[in-house]
Amino acid sequence: MEGAQDVTARTGSVFTGEDVPAKERFDCWRELIGRTRDSEMTSAHADHFEAEMRRLELGPVTLLRSSFPPARFQRTARMVRRSDPGVYHLTLVLDGGLSLARDDRDRTAVFGPGELYMLDSTQPYDVRAFTGRAADRVERRVEALGIDFPVSLLPLPPYRLHDLMGRGFSGREGTCALLADFLFGLDRQAAALGPAEAPRLGTVVVDLVAAWLARELDAEAALPDDARQRALMENVRTFIRRNLHDPELSPSVIAAAHHISVSYLHRVFTRQSQGETVAAWVRGQRLEQARRDLADPALRAMPVHVLAARWGIPRASDFTRAFRAAYGIPPSEHRRQALSACANGSPRR
Image (cartoon, rainbow, N blue to C red):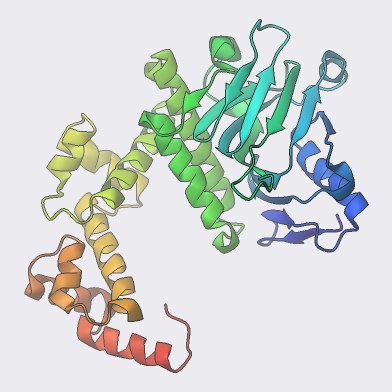
């Protein structure tokens, strides 16, 4: 499609509209969304539609990051009868708002920034995207992050989810926050993802959706063991990343935070991490963060031992020994080389 550019080989595309005549942009954007979200789309801004979209293919899962003016999306009963692809649509609102009207609900639901909701393609719906005005009276765009995936991938029967469809949930709490954080991370790293990684990441997305929905249904036991374990490990990794600064972070602390035994944590983590232990992964994450900081010109005045302590390694000798073992040179030499390369115009690594 003209106006859509490759993000990564075979994994997705980006729409900016820069190379498309103004009057054709809305049709291009509508076609890109319609590949997985079949609906009648209209907008008062169609003649001069300023929008952006990143579409990332993760195996059978599609990630959509969109920014667009107010618009309306109607999936009619006739469209459902004509074609039902059997797809779930999950949408996280980042800015602006979305209102949702459904034939089987009396009230219109409204979702604001930080809220998400889920629909399925078997039901008609009417979604209106709206914005407020900024202080300079310029109308903002609607910003949203969404995922689409086949109903058959979710290890929960559709009839169990009927009452959850179209409900608003906070993307800042519990398992829902973990899902939102993971989607943000995928969006940020989209340009760096290769085709080989895509299907695995799509599986993780579905596992996290399943874990969130099962928690809402109080039906976690209904999930397959592999799905529960993958979701647990993503939760564990997120917890570790957020607490790397704490020198007391240990397998026992991590296990307690997730209400599991240390032995179960070790067993599942090793299985899900190709044999790597919890302690080794924590150490690797700390060293990698410290390595990046050592190469940052803005932190050149910070002593090496202080920088290491920021990432939970308070003993300078322990840091130096671990850094040398991991990267082959002392941290001070890595800093010297990295800053020298930066001064000469070479990119940081």
